Length: 251
Image 1 (cartoon, rainbow, N blue to C red):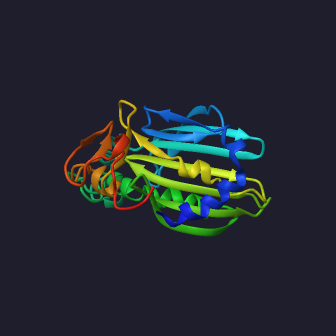
Image 2 (image 1 turned 60 degrees about the vertical axis):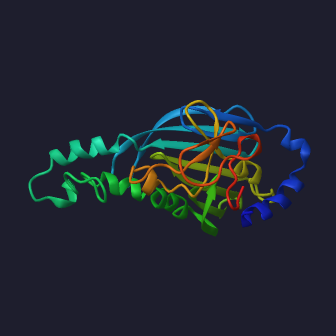
Image 3 (image 1 turned 180 degrees about the horizontal axis):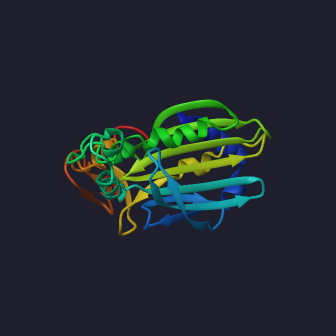
């Protein structure tokens, strides 16, 4: 069990079963995730400006419950290499910071497009660190064996508490954020509910840690996962009861 799960067990018991009944699982097959929201989220199409200045398509799912705020932002990096190739072709000869790694996408990529994918987790996490807040905790963690960065912070303006988890899967960046008023338990119910789905809406739980820098870039095949009672992919152990894969530890 992850360390954070122990912390949230106390917080969730304080929140009580009555409030938990207001929460429902929301699934986005289009963006490949499932999560509990306290109501139906509003969905907005936006543009996300990446570290290297690419305008990428994104969707923001939000629910406000009183003074509580919950959101999931999903940024699609899958078109960035094409954008990088187009940008690189317009660069003057010898302008390496503009052209990047022409003809090789493995490390830097054309116009730093691969580099942008590799650094997306750090870049998104840094946006939280720059806020007017005290960072209580910043750590590496995972949800259903997809690696990510976890941030706990207290906002200076009103002493509200924000918890965020930033992950990346199949070149999609996921930024999950929950903020609650001063004195409330951290939004652990929201955080603990995050999971992944495939194109058919079936739950995905990998057999080993999913690292987007490796699997999203296609350097190796994705690790296998449990799905609908059947084991998909190679390596690892088969699915357990109810179609859930059985990793060594974790949620």
